[in-house]
Amino acid sequence: MSEKINNQANVLRHGNKVSSIELLKQKLNMPKNLSPNFGEIVSVETNIIKATGLSPSVGDVVWLIRSDDSRTEGIVIATHKEIFSISPFSFTEGFKSGDRVTIAKEGLRIPVGEELLGRVINPLGMPLDDQGILQTMQTTPIINAPISALKRGLIDEVFSVGVKSIDSLLTCGKGQKMGIFAGSGVGKSTLMGMIVKGSQAPIKVVALIGERGREVPEFIHKNLNNDLSNTILVVATSDDSPLMRKYGAFSAMAIAEYFKSLGNDVLFIMDSVTRFAMAQREIGLALGEPPTSKGYPPSVLALLPQLMERAGKEEGKGSITAFFTVLVEGDDLSDPIADQSRSILDGHIVLDRSLTDFGIYPPINILNSASRIMNDIIAEEHKLAARKFRRMQALLKENEVLIRIGSYHKGNDAELDEAIDKKIVIEEFLGQDENTQVDFTESVMQMINIANNSVM
Image 1 (cartoon, rainbow, N blue to C red):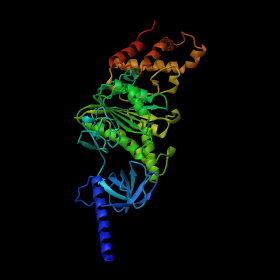
Image 2: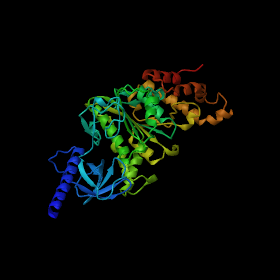
Image 3: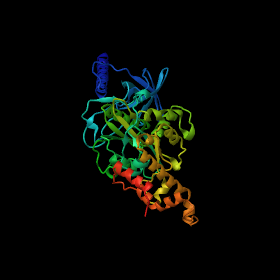
Image 4: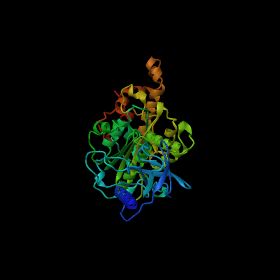
């Protein structure tokens, strides 16, 4: 009798075990006749989970399975002989040593297609809006190699953004990479909205990485006027895991690359590179990398060109014109991330907090900003007028104190006299309402008239 009871108990235990495995296969979308290989978690740290029992490659996606069969995705970020390190897309709370790990797929992919237009998604391609699931079966790898140097097309066409000071004095080209450098609260988001609304690009991809959650609906309603036509938002807020914030940038770039491959000229905007770098700093320090300047490990500086160099113009395809915002702490442009970004990008737009005191919006400091492509894509008249406009700005800046205290007397310097006469007109030209877009030709003509004509 006792043996019969024990046999029944064994059958029940075996039955429950089979049921649990089959249920797990369904959750993991695995065929019933496939027996997954499981590894085991041996260590759980703040941002890193270490496991053994499998032989994954760096970049493989894995399922992390808790004892109650609930699960989350993660990516293998380092391997050592028998132990490999995983960064989860969620946080590590709830995991413990002994929980299971299984390989989900080789490399992370994201859904792509025209169905993404007008949508707000997370870095894994899951919708964050209320428009239902994405009706697309196409996917593309999140991590791709940058465009080969010899396959890059020459940047020879103007890319208009509808902002007078940028179009006329910091002219951008199709396929150019520009940085927007500013401290907190100076107006990066407002300028981003102006560029998205003013650009004529058929496809616009916006990556909001590591920003406050409330800024997402504000950006949509306030800066974009609820107009997401031809626009895709990829969002990873500050409360997401470091891996979500890191891969949010790569996911957005992968989407832009897909539309570029179809021959489109794509506008890519990312806010911000600094939050992206901070996410990698958290991951790198958790892996034991040595900290360098401001605590950033070497992997951060290596990661920036891997992202930024994927933008550009490719022969036989379209282009990705990219604007990367960089948050400079304390308005310090020597910040390591700002410094590294400037060395990679094709130009930089500096927002100056002091200009906001004079009511100049967007507060672009023309003298500290530059476009490395500008002289190759504009007409000679435009080039000469822009140089004269900048020189007048420099003269006003250099002699500002003398002018204000009345120590300068007209007639001593003809160039400075002209700049003083045009000071009000110059300031009016540099300012622009956030809901106003100005045609490229009109912007250039206004600047040329100011530079070359006398003011009564």
